[in-house]
Every structure is written in structure tokens, then in C-alpha cells.
Length: 569
Image: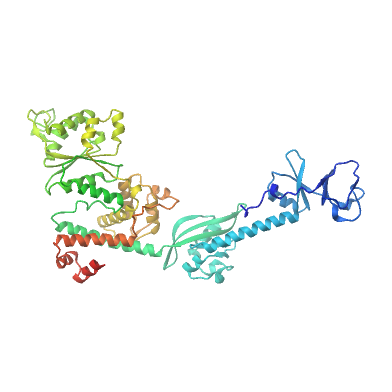
């Protein structure tokens, strides 16, 4: 730590003589040590032994000019305290905790140490500034530019030789200078989107520079994000077109894509889609696990669409939303007059409604224990009795169950039957929370923006880069459901077509991470993601037209030449 001021213990000199005899006798003029210290009535005094060729009389009263009073500090004192004393004394005597002298400091020694630390600190500072690629600017208390890095030269097209030493207000309008707010008000900014020029957008960090509780300057670090903002705007427009194309294709397609409502291209999502595709020729029971809000019902519907016919029913029942007393009648149905208040015509249960299709048991961990026994019997025997009925009914359905609870833990606690668990847990799909596939946030956000801009008839023209940064840095404890609600809120408040950071929910703004988000290696650039999206739409159109490219181009609303160009690309 050579750039830090050394401690007193590192600088003290010990080549001294302590003189305590009374009465004071003669001291040698040129001994082996350069200085003597003596405790006199008015405090410690020092005498430079090499100051004269004649013997020095140690008695202050006989030779007052030869002695001078010194400052006294303990060895544990900070160096600035010694520097302050050396302003009025030539020497500072250093003592231990008991007051016994252990050495001394003089002006030349301390001055050399301070200057050396300054030179090292300056070398570190200059090298760091020259190495930085980002724009760094520093102003003093009079708003004069003190530092202007090469990054600042590139972003603002101003050379350091032209701006350093001059007021920054000579080059930028007052309302564009966030650094001045830090200088005048002590305001700090972190990753704030700023537009110092009409054609330039930057992310800026600013901080005031304090010395002894007084602001003596301000520093700003800026990163050019103009291209990212433009790309984001282009991606928003392209996503609108792609979503529109997908909807039009879905209307015309006889075999809709089972994954059309599942957004995301992360590795985890691609793996889950691959697993679901393999279920196409099976009737295996599927258990979907994942936190609340990850979209488990969408994946359950995808499982249904992959392996059932177009007209097969998909019946969902939320096990946590039905009263335990009504659960049996909802699941199995009942005969007329089965109980007081029952419909006189009777009622079909969810199992009967799901005949030939899929019964989706959402939040299966909430199912009452007595119903778990009855459901297990249905799964084993493929038959059941309606409530109040005497005739068995054949059960013909496939089960997809979902839960956000740890069923194994519930088994240990006696809240879930182990035999039912193993009946349900034939194929497990674990849906990762959004924070573990944060790269999908961009596609999901744009999809929801498109959805709500249509719903509320509010075209979105621009999204602040700060908004996207906040969305990517937030943990999303409520997962996709929370993201969807946040995007709806943004659209509701975007009355002028611009999405702004201040319209984000408070939780998203306040919990944005300070560290950069580490994204998985399989994340592509926005341009690559856009091209991949377009590629999927084009290939799907060609598939629907059985390879007829002219018909595919017509379906997509583009010329055949444009289609061929895109295919070649």
C-alpha cells in the first residue's frame, strides 16, 4: 500500500540521545548521534549536536539558543497529527504508551515520505485513467474539468487538451449536466439513463467528491448505449410484426404450435420443450413442479396439445380453490338428488368432462387427504362412482398435475400420500423460476408490451434502457405473473407512448441489483435473437405450405425475392 501515507512507526528515527542528568553537564558537539532530547521543566527540548564545533552547554539557562522545544506524540498517533506539529516544531518526539521516548520525527523525513506517497498515488491514478475505456470526467469545486479520459473524448468528440482546465458549462447546457447536481446538491446517480445530446444516450453514474465533509468536486462515469437503445426500439417494432404474423398463422394453421404461448429461448426452456415433444406418443402421468407464477398451466396445456387430438378436452381444476366438502362432487360429479341442494338433473364431474382428454390438477399439493385416496383408486382401477351413484363409470383421461410445494417434504409431514406421489410422478417437468433464465425477460417483456398495447390501444414507441436494465436486474419473486403485471402497469401509465423507469413498480426499482447480472453462455445478442425469431416464423410458413415458397411468401405478406434473400441469409 505504498500510495497510502505511512504510519509513524514506519518513519521514526532512533539515532538520538536522551539526556536526563541534573544539573545538566556538557554534551559532546559531534558525537555518534545527531540530536539529544532532554525533559526540562517546560517540556521536552531538543539540541542538534552537530550544530557547532565547540562543546554545547546543556543548561538551557546558559545556552538558550542551542535548545528548542519539541512536539510529543505516542507511536500510535496518526501521521497527520505529526505533520501538524512539524508545522511549528523542527522535531516531534515519539513515546510509547508509558511516555518513554522511542524515537523522533523530523521535517525532511516526513516530507520525503509524503512526497513519495503522492508520486506513487499519481502514477496509479494516471495509469488507471489511461487504461479505462469508459468515459470518466472530474470537475472541481468551480466546475472546471480536471479529468477527461479517452473514453470521454470518443463519446463527446471533445479533446482533453481543449476542455481540461475550463468550466464544463462552456461545452454543455446547464440542464444537461448531471455532474453539476452532484457538485451543488451532493446528489448521486447509478446507471441513470441520460441524454447529453440529441443523438447520444448514455448510462451515467455520478458522485460528489468530499474532503472533510465539504464537496470539492464531482466525478461522472458514462457508457454509450445509443446503439442498444436503437436496437431495443427496433426489436420492439419487429416483435409486434412477428407476433402479428404468428397470430395470423395460427388462424390459418390446422395444427397449431403447442408451444406458441410459451415464450423464451433459454437453454432450460428448450430442454423442457424437447421433453414435452417426446411425450407425444405416450399416456404417462406428468408432474410439473415450479414456483408460483412460472406458467405451469401453459406447460400443462402444451403437454395436452402434443399428445391429444384437436378436439380433446383440457379440463383444469385448482385443488386449492375448492372447498374440501365440495371437492368430491366437483371431481366425480353427482346423481340427481344425491344431497340437499343438488341439481335435480345431476352434474358431470371434472373426470367425466375430461373424457378422452387431459385432467389438469393444478396445486395438487392442496388436495385433501381423503380425496387423495379416492383419486388414487381411480388411477389404479380406471373406474369411479359419482356421488350418490350406484353405477361405476369408466375413466378415460390423462393426468397432468402441478404444484409449487415440495411434495416429498409433505410426505414426511404426513400431508401427502406417498403412493399417490409415485403415481403422479412418472414424468417430471421442473420449470425454472424467471431469475434462473433472466435472458427470457426481454422476449417476455416485449410480448406483454405488444399484448397490452393492443388491449389498451396505446402504441408503444420507445422503452427507456433503464427500464430494461431494471427488468433484467430484478429477481422476480412472483416470476412471469409478476413481470406481466409490471408490464401492464407500464403500458397503463405510458400515455405518450414512452415506457419510463419511474412508472415501474417500486419493488422493481428498489431491488435492482448493483452488480452486473451474469447471463448464461447461450444468450445471443438482440439482433441474433430477432433473426432466430424471424427464422422460426419463415420455416413454419414453408412447412404449412408443404415447401411451396411462393405460397409461403404470400402467407407472410412478403415478395418471393425477399423470402429467398432471407432464406439465403
